[in-house]
Length: 381
Image: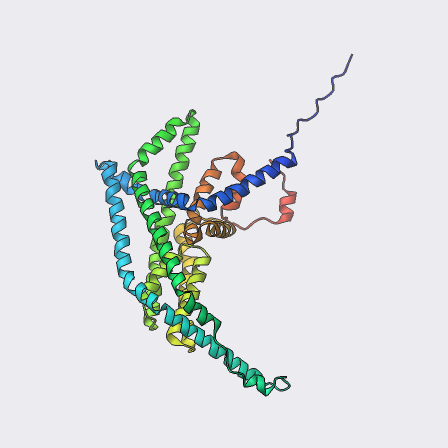
């Protein structure tokens, strides 16, 4: 009687090396495609992110009997009125800062030249220095930085005008697209759910859409309030120190704080530059950036974690990498929407079994990680 042999265990087929190389090429192609498609994709993503914020008041107006087209128009007009009002308040300080920019650059160049001359004179007094009197009596050469600023002023103005025109076109496209998305948000969601054949999948898709709307809307709304308070306190602090244009610095702080890690670093450098323009070489030059860093430390370590809670916590490494990636692709606008995009990606990963591992790296965990020894001893269920 023949004894039946056990069948060999089934093993998953391994992908060939050429398949992995092809996937890597596809990823590289997608990255460069995103960089080239910035004028098209950036207004779309910003409008979608703003739709998650403003869709709630539009739905509330629809429950009160207001048609979605009229409710979307009311919300967009109210948002535009707020933005225009803030812009009109900041236009005067910004124009004054722009007019003072050439003089400021010359002052900084002169200050750098004076510091360099002082260091040079100090180095000449060091014993044993090998310098001839003829070299010491050599007249100072012209500053190449000042010459370059004077020669490239016209080309710089042309570049700025071109950037302003492109920004105006993208802003107009974003506003128009935002209105259409708000006016047809219910229709778009209904058609998307209707196109899914399975009932369970419909529930997953609808739950993912609503969760992304809640999380992104909550993040943008909460961060707007926090940054508004931080900008107000920063403006009051620099005003008490005698720094000109405190309203402008408060607005810059509020906007740049939407960019994690890099935004506060930029604000610190700008306040240090503004302090050097106003206070010269006085130690008071360190007061504006020091005040901002103290306020930002309180906001980032106590206020934001307490307000956001565990629900919107993300891993700091994933946030920093997202800011670097989108900032490299699309500049400051990409860095501003890096965290909302990361929240949307986390929502997708939560509802896909294949992406559960990615979700573990995206989510922040307040509990301490187990030791490596404990992980090696732990048996998988």
